[in-house]
Amino acid sequence: MKNKKMMFSTLWVFVTFNYLYCDLIGLMDASLLKQYLTGHVEGMTINEPFLLLAGILMEIPISMIVLSQLLPARFNAIANATAGFIKTIVMIATLFAGHVSSYYLFFAIIEIGTTLFISIKAIQWLKSIKTYVLTYQA
Image (cartoon, rainbow, N blue to C red; front, side):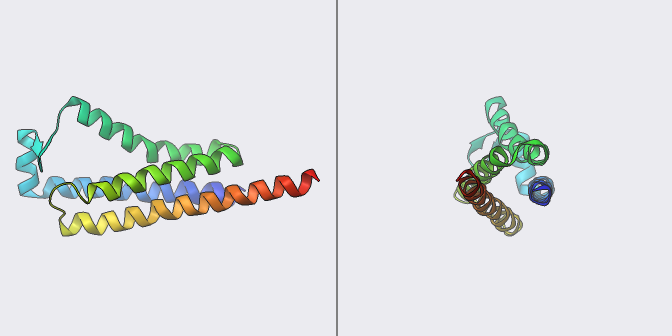
């Protein structure tokens, strides 16, 4: 179980760095930077509620780095599956919001692949936990 916890934690570190580096590169994109300075990016208004929601969405993978190490197996698997699913859906949705640059698409494919992998592996882990419990209760 310790290896699973380390694997999930490491995957969340990996995907978090990808989220952050993609955002950093976005700030180097002159056309996007100009939009950020006006508070309107690709038709979206960048205001306090938007930034709060963005912060909450980024706290999911950040907190999963620690929670993957601390939660007991069953809750760990559920949390990883849920967080991975949420982040996968959010990233897919961003592909339909405004212009998608080549660098954004590159990172999005890596991020979606990673969070989808996390969800699948967490569901498999949860199933194996349930099978183990059912086998040893009898």
